[in-house]
Image (cartoon, rainbow, N blue to C red; front, side):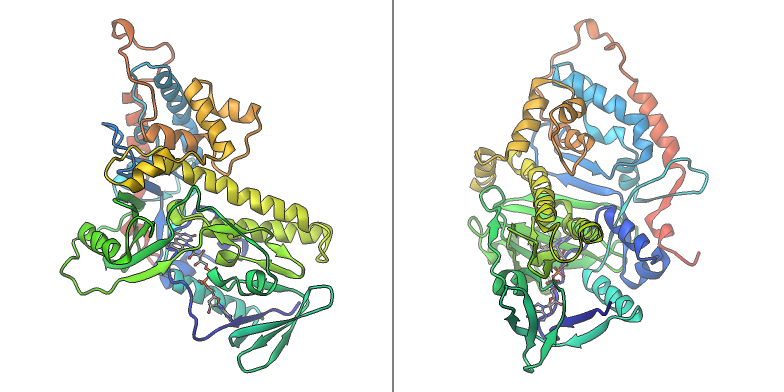
Length: 469
Ligand SMILES: Cc1cc2nc3c(=O)[nH]c(=O)nc-3n(C[C@H](O)[C@H](O)[C@H](O)COP(=O)(O)OP(=O)(O)OC[C@H]3O[C@@H](n4cnc5c(N)ncnc54)[C@H](O)[C@@H]3O)c2cc1C
């Protein structure tokens, strides 16, 4: 098979997107690239998960950590479910997620997720990286492995009578023919949206954010090992630690806040009001195309859609799309026999992520702007999310009920429970009668001790990043 990468030398990449899920590790493993090779080239760091700050105002629940689930969590997860279950039934036990998860402790200590060899559990983790450098790195790898590179802007396409793409037309009026085309043209969706005219389904009714402003700050001496997502007045700000800088951005809704005010608020939050570091402003198109594989074209990345970056899921969706596409073509061929099923699965993948993201907004308890009040009052709640909230409120076991009702989600019951308990989404507490232990409850001191001992097996992010040490 011959592969050519056609890229416009003057359009440039979107330049943001610095956080990943553990899926990216699987991707690098699949293409046979070691961390020691790609991470230093891309200023990459290890990621334990994401801290959410200021989304809930309930006392004791002003922040929480969303971990990447790992084998070691099996030892504390039951206690976590037990306590959150009891707390949902109005019993005043400890139910904030952070004390139950090793990676919350590692993140607080700025330790990375890779243990010493003697640690008996497998850890799943993500990365932070410079998106532009990862793009360059992968381009170089592709060229080394036989792809060719055509620097050119696609300005038109020629279609066959049946609607397939016959060839691309460049700004130098050259024709590039191929059997199959992959549209990675970013938000413009040059092939899939502009020329093949696949409609775009907006998620605007439940996700209000459509803009971002981005500013770098200097790295701290001790490099962090988590993304921090802090709610601001009209959206939220990310902080992503790379080896050479911290990436920061404010994702907001332009219906509630203009670009100048957003930049000012981000600068204020970062202590950069008097700094002349330049900010970059971006527009985001939130939603997805109706069909990701149309005729002889597959859309990947921002051209296929984007759910705002709150849980850093875009590359996760890209990876899922790639793996599903390969499996579909392997079983049903490239002509399109498996296309409808594939498109339905990718759409469902988008919707499953969307529903988890929407939960962050509708459950917020902030009162400081119309933005937050309208998010909390939004009645456009997707059905799957309604079902999950209903299970949680009813006090039934979340994991068994999700299984019984066959609620598919790309987030596990553990992730949902972290979000819901991390927001303090519980009935009012009442004291346990006579202050007795609830039968079956694990002593929190034992959990603290287990996690303290586990954490002894992990090194600091700074140490982990010395690949030659
Ligand atoms: C604010 C924000 C934050 C994000 N955060 C995350 C995150 O934390 N984690 C995550 O996984 N993702 C995140 N993303 C998404 C992430 O940016 C993308 O998944 C990733 O960068 C891939 O982008 P892409 O290749 O689809 O598009 P782009 O980076 O825009 O690349 C498009 C490419 O197509 C080329 N091109 C465009 N039009 C033409 C044409 N007509 N002819 C020839 N070439 C053309 C361009 O030159 C460019 O090389 C974020 C996105 C935004 C907007």
